[in-house]
Image (cartoon, rainbow, N blue to C red; front, side, top):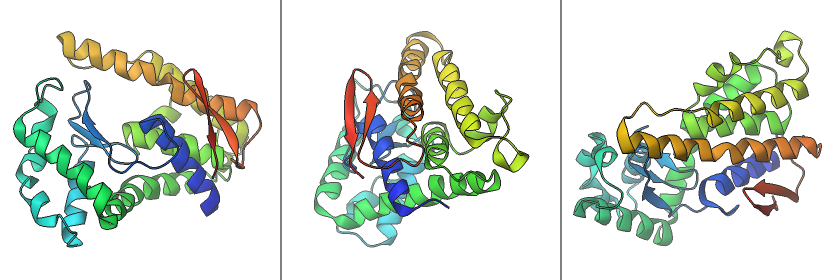
Length: 247
């Protein structure tokens, strides 16, 4: 297990990828052209993956300030209705839901805690289990794995491992070589991604995913600088900008 400081740095890096800021933005929510429906929270969970549903249900169970208002949207969330919406022509209920999400994040700390809890249980815990089974001890290795999980789900780690030959420490490999190989394999996968959707929706989805190669470019830059422990502060390459991760 890595330190809490390293975990915090990883969360800040992911926040940069997802929202453009190292400060966790729990109130962000939108619908993108990727077919995932609502995409929101500090690490941008989606309705399609069930993360938005789990956040809202966790908040309702905690009896938060706006729990009753959120309850009115559970049928739409459970049916993944947002995944079929046009981002440029949203249904009134979706506009209302996103407004409520932003209000709850701004006014009720329990809503932010519900998000943190869901991301911890649904993403961090499965990543930690896999990282420990591979005997990974470097924060950069954990960060790259968590990045994959946030973007494509925890199962993406095992799938990506099949695309390169470097062995993890559990199989007597060099962890630094393994982490760099993982980042390069992931970058190649992103750059060659083709959407399963047809027509204009598929074209937009393909372009959106391919544009996210900056995530692995950022990790590879951290590796090139030798900051394997994610010691803060450190500069993070983000598209054409440089953002400082303060820790």
